[in-house]
Image (cartoon, rainbow, N blue to C red):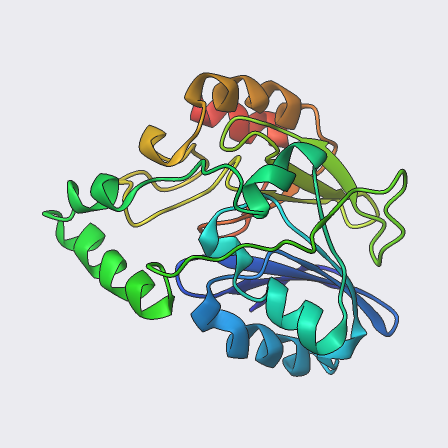
Length: 238
């Protein structure tokens, strides 16, 4: 776990990150790892001196299974609301599928790093079906710890969203911009390989949106946090 700015924590799970944002005794959780990461999500909250009940809301960057894991658990046990971009509701409710198929991964599993990653995520619940029917569209104003501001960046999925934490100068980019992945030989700011992405052309266009975000710390859905202007990260990708 890294505290990337005052009260903002990047927590690594099974080859995926979630973000904790602290404001006094209250927390916002951004994304929820795999199903197998649920104990780690709760442990990360307790590690910073909080209880799972302190999470006032969960923000989802996009409806892929490696980000959905803890959402139903928190809703059922702690009545934690989950918010997504309206264009992501169909995906999170299971009415639309916009993620890589098993065959896409298997065709690349001859690479040792991809094979090892595949085995890890299978143990974490990659072959299970997860929907979040109780997810809500953003209200007119997100009144959550850290004052998160949604940054729509469709492409990876139809409602893919980053979240700017303006007081901390941090942006949680989900999979709209990452810094590493076991299926990629690149290290540093990058887009995920196209087979993970619903609309690669829109995902590349969304980089223009991210480049204008006033933040100097990126917390990606995959890979280590990155420090520097968003415009510099985007230029490196391009």
